[in-house]
Length: 72
Image 1: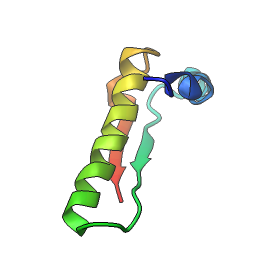
Image 2 (image 1 turned 135 degrees about the vertical axis):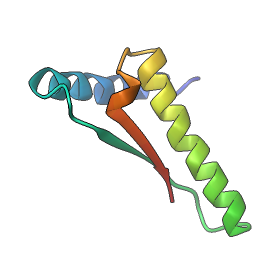
Image 3 (image 1 turned 180 degrees about the vertical axis):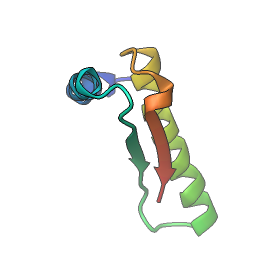
C-alpha cells in the first residue's frame, strides 16, 4: 500500500502509450531472490506481478486487457 505512489509515473507512461496505440499490451514482471524453494519463489513472483497489474487497473484505470503478467 505504501508503494502505490511509486507506480504513478509508470501509470502515466502507460496512459500516454495507450493514447497513441490503444491495442498496446504491457508485460508486468515479478521477481524474487533465489532464497527458498523454486516453486515458492515462482508463486511469489507471480503474485507480485499480478498485484502491480491489479493496482494499475483499480487505482489508475489502466484497462486490464492491456496488461499481462509473468513471474520469474
